[in-house]
Amino acid sequence: MSKSILNKESLDFLESYLNNAAPTGYEWEGQKIWMNYLKPYVDTFITDNYGTAVGVINPDAKYKVVIEGHADEISWYVNFITDDGLIYVIRNGGSDHQIAPSKLVNIHTKNGIVKGVFGWPAIHTRDKSDEKAPKLDNIFIDTGCKNKEEVEKLGVHVGCVITYPDTFTILNGDKFVCRALDNRMGGFMIAEVARLLKENSKKLDFGLYIVNSVQEEIGLRGAEMITHTIQPNVAIVTDVTHDTTTPMIEMKTNGRAAIGDGPVISYAPAIQQKLRDLIIETAEEKNIPFQRSACSRATGTDTDAFAYSNGGVPSALISLPLRYMHTTVEMVHRDDVENVIKMIYESVLKIKDGQSFSYFD
Image 1 (tube, helix red, strand yellow):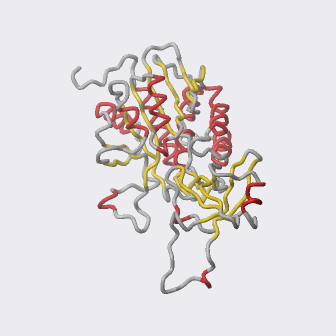
Image 2 (spheres, rainbow, N blue to C red):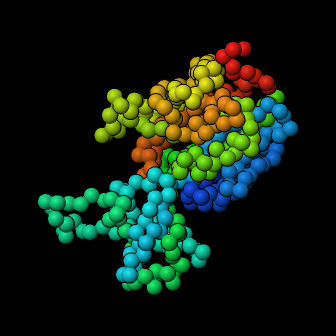
Image 3 (cartoon, rainbow, N blue to C red):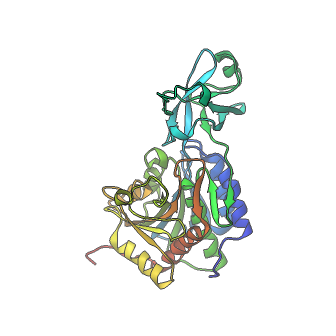
């Protein structure tokens, strides 16, 4: 495999996929983009009632291996409209209230996108001795309307979902920056694994299920549903994890991970050790750099949903280090993206049909 595995078509797909809004519960337009890109590299698709999409290679095989990312991005819901036309919100996922002031927003309505801004009092007007921090109960959206009736005429109502319009950019040649890299990058990377398998004419003796799950941001719900549909034998999940080298992060409690230093392999009760050993041995054999991370009770990713389903599915987590999670300027390193793809690709090729990961075999 050549050193650089991303091509122009890959990056064009990544840009269109990232720039499309796919908030939790409303992922289907992004899933259509993802499935259209993946179509030449799989034999068939599975979808479910909530929007999870699965590309399948060798659908008739009895032994099933999952590689998975999640498709949804954090967002807001319209929660209350005041008489003077201001909109108060609640979270849809782990949206960060502290970054909201002065941000442009897209309010999704049946009439299309309505633009708005998270307003904030000017610095000149604030009490310097008692400045208020942004909180969920004091951030608000201004659509330029003078009253509630004008807002409602635009098609805005309680329950409308709200996203940020920030789009994909590249910094310094090798840093990808956008909102929703968590975890649109996961869907991108597993799609690239499927592409490489096809382009390199690799034949698998098991079924490979390339899973782009919905609703991870509100409790791993999409993975929880689709794992019972697929009933896999093995699952390799990819998500993002924190780069802890930026200011105001304590490494003694958060561990150390840095963008550019390679994928992060997790240690946690949900991680099946023999599967993790296979991944580590593969990375060492193929000279793929990696970092390690320890989790306490849970990984907080879809790994937990797969691991504890169907009587226990051997599962592992390969994470992409990311800066500024749940902001609109999430940042990852291109080298890490390529190395996650390589690590999953090479690990999949190591798995054999019917392979047991039991400690007692």
